Length: 267
Ligand code: SAM
Image (cartoon, rainbow, N blue to C red; front, side, top):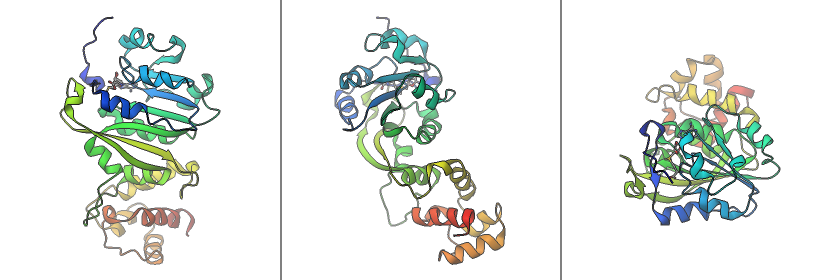
C-alpha cells in the first residue's frame, strides 16, 4: 500500500493513538442503525467502525485514499467528494441509510470543522455524532462553566439546542502524525427528541444567532436594534426580564431561546 503524504490544506493529521481510536469507535449507540464517516483518510477509524456490522458509508475529499479505504469496505460505500458540497440527505437516500438512526463519526479537518458540524446538525436522520475538534472549538460546545459564564455563542446555542453534548476524551498533539499545532477533544452528540427551537426553524435560528453575536462587546439591546424594530426588541427584553445592558455572550441558553421566540412569535 502506497504511503500518502499529509496534505495540510485538507487538514490531514492522522490518528495513531490506539486508546483514542478505541474510545471513538466503541461509542456505538445501541440503537444506531447506520454509520457515516466523514474524512476517513487512510481508514484508521473505518477499519474498526466496519466491525459494528452496520450499513456504512464514508465521504472523503482526497481521492488518494480510495484504495486504502477499499481494504475495509466495499467501494460502493465510498464517496470521494467534498462533504461541504454534497447533499447529505440525498446521499442517505441513495445508499438506503436513512430508515433508522445514523451515527456520524468524524475526526474533522479543523479548517472546515465548524461548517461541517453545522451541516450535520441540520440532517434529521443523523441522531448521534462523535466528532473530534480542535480543543478551543470543542470547548465552545461543552465549556467548563466558570463564574464569568461567557461562553455563549452561535456554536454553543445550536449544539445545545439540538443535541445533548458531552466530552468523551482529550487528545494530545502527539496522538497524530503529523502532529497539529493545537490540542484536540472528542465530543459526543445525541439529538434531542423535542428541541426548544424545532429543526424546521434551524435556518432562522442560525440567522438570529448570527445577528445576536455580530458584536459580542456591544449591549444586547444595541445589537438587536440593528436588526429588528426597537419597540419589538425593548418590549421583548422587558418581558423576558433580561437587562438590556447585558452582553450577548453572558446570556443563558434559555434566555437566547426566549429572545428568538419573542422576536419571531412575539412570545
Ligand atoms: N479519519 C482520519 C484519521 O482519524 O486519522 C483522517 C482525519 S484528518 C484530521 C481529516 C480528513 O478529512 C482527511 O482525510 C481529509 O482529506 C478529509 N477532508 C478534508 N476536507 C474534507 C471535506 N470537505 N470533505 C470530506 N473530507 C475532507
